[in-house]
Length: 266
Ligand code: IPD
Ligand code: CA
Ligand code: CA
Image (cartoon, rainbow, N blue to C red; front, top):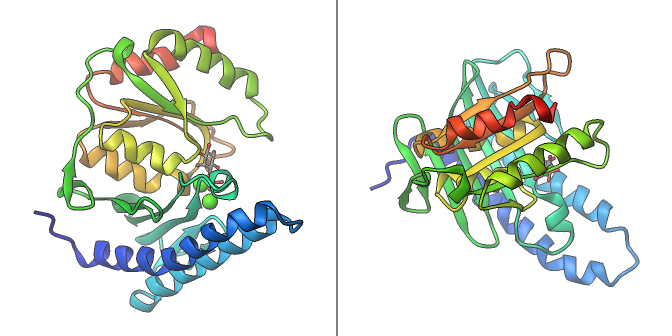
C-alpha cells in the first residue's frame, strides 16, 4: 500500500495538471514535422508552458520555497532549506521527434538532501515516485532495483555526449570500455527515465557525464529508495553544476565503479 505525504501529493497534482497541455503538444508534433514551422520554437514554448503550470501549482502551496528549474533558473534563491528541483520536459529531443520517451521530473530537497521525487511519463502514464524511508513505486506497485550479480549479465543505460561537449572522446572511450564488459548498452535520451528504469529493474545500471542537477534529482531518491546505489565521480570544482553520475543495484555497483574509474579511460 502506497501512503503519500502531502509533498508527494502536491507534486502529483502539479504533474497531472501540466501533463494535459504536454499531451496535447505531443499530439501536435506529427503535424509540425510536416509543416515549415521551426519545431525547436514549438518545443521551447511547450517546455516553458509546462514549467509555468508546475511552478504555479507548487507556489500556490508554498510561495516562499526555493526553486531550481531548467528554464526559469533560481526562484527564492536564498531558501536552500526547502527547495523544488524541476525539469519540465526531460528528453526534449525525443519529444521533438515524436518519440514517447520523455518525462516531467520534480524533486523536493530539505537542507540540500533530496527527500522525495516524481518522474512522470504522461504518454505511457507511468508515474515513478519515491520518498525517503517509504520506498519507491511505479504507479501503485512497489519497485526494486534488479538483482543481477555480474556486469557481464547487465543491461546498462547511458547518454551523451551532447553536441557542445568538450570531452566527447573521453565519453566515447568510456562507452567502448563499458560495452566490452556488459551484456549491452542502451541510449534512450531521457536521464530521468533512465534512472527510473534502473529503480524498477528494467536497466541494471546507469552512468553519464555532464548532467544538470534537474536531470537527475528525482532519480536519485528513486534509485536509493528502490535499494540501489548512486554516486558522483570526477566532480568538477569549477563548474559544479555539472554532475557525473553512476547508479546501479548494490551487487554490481563496485565492479561498475571500477570500470568507470579505470585509468585507461582518462
Ligand atoms: C537531456 C536528457 C538526455 C541527457 C542530456 C540532458 P533535456 O535533458 O536528459 O538524456 O543525455 O544530458 O540534457 O535537455 O531533454 O531536458
Ligand atoms: Ca528539459
Ligand atoms: Ca533534462
